[in-house]
Image: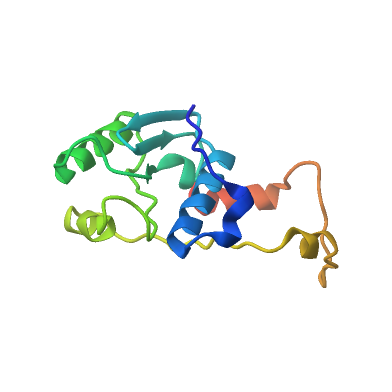
Amino acid sequence: MYSIRCDSENLGALTDADRIVSLERLAYNAWTARDVKRYGHWFLRADEGVTRRANSVYPFGAPPTSDLQDAVEHCISFYEKRDILPRFQVTSVSKPDGLDKSLEDFGFAFEMRTYLQTAPIDGLLHFEPTIKVEILTEPEPAWIHTYAEAGG
């Protein structure tokens, strides 16, 4: 298991790029995969279930080779051996620069956009929801069915 160091106490003082890197590091450490292989500064993650985050390449820095096609083929092989669709989690700070365009050139397609939202914790602690929320001890069959249809 790999964790990535993040200075979460000073997020407000960082540039946008530094803030994105720090938040992505926090998310990486919070949502880990069962199987993680380091490939240079890329992290190849594999797990069970439908989670795309834990079943994707996290390109935190440069791969160990300057030949990007070789690096991508290495990643494809990693996922094919596990019978997982190869995916990359690409952000505006992924490395190398222009990775999303290069992946498109290699035949990858944009799949989905996700958003990482933040809020001051004090506001969340005193938040009163305007809708009814029910917290269950285990998921209901209808939820499991919907979740499975989403990609499971």
